[in-house]
Length: 298
Ligand code: GDP
Image 1 (cartoon, rainbow, N blue to C red):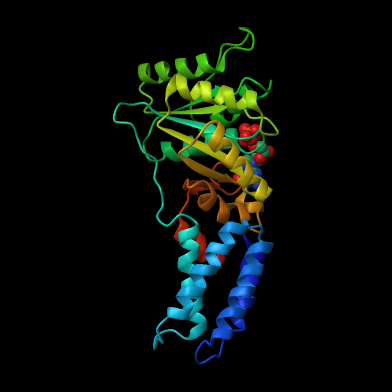
Image 2 (image 1 turned 90 degrees about the vertical axis):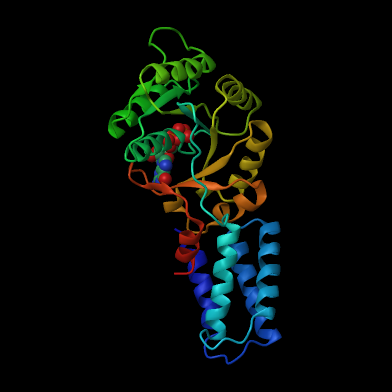
């Protein structure tokens, strides 16, 4: 995860070692190198600009410190700015006062929604919640079966349309699932919706219809971090088309660069709430900006 960016930043900071005090030239040179490292990591340009402006301003204003040498001081500033760009505080799920809490997953096909439904379900179950997974992706023939397989592995019940009843209406399935959850005391409903390979109006409309029918407490936009800048563009399209409360980043394990993670919060204004880091159900956790920043600067 983020190895390329990590390595680049380590090299940048190494060149500051042994300096007694940072000159204006040191600050400019280092800022320029960090800028290049971020651009190579595929971080969106407006994010890079803001980031560098903050870092420079703070490096110039930094007091001479006995505890930290100039390199350490620069690292501290970059660390704090990375935390900011990643969202500052962690954002937790908000639960409804009148259960079930409805969580809707939206995103492109292949982004990892179905897998994430299982992971989130298992994660919630470990916190004593009683989730119900809902197969409202009726577009792909395999999607319902896939969620059922994931549910079985995660040991979380799945609500799906009865086989043999034709394609079915995803809005109706979503609506019924909430009723079912109420009847069977599931305190959380996780709705897996249909995605396409690219942004598409019909898919957006379907997600918007499900949203209007069940009025989710949380809409999570699920996005593959490995697609870099495209993740940011897709995030913007979904924000305009469906709207969402938070982002779940998937496939961070395969993302050497980190551009999506570092851009998405700043560009969309929405917090990253979860991170998925592998194909196994356990490869999942709440997203913590401070821990992620430390990993990058490790
Ligand atoms: P959906 O079409 O959005 O429901 O996506 P899926 O859940 O079917 O995931 C698509 C593919 O990505 C599957 O092969 C998953 O095993 C894989 N996948 C999902 N999340 C992760 C992840 O965090 N890391 C890795 N390496 N693979 C993942």
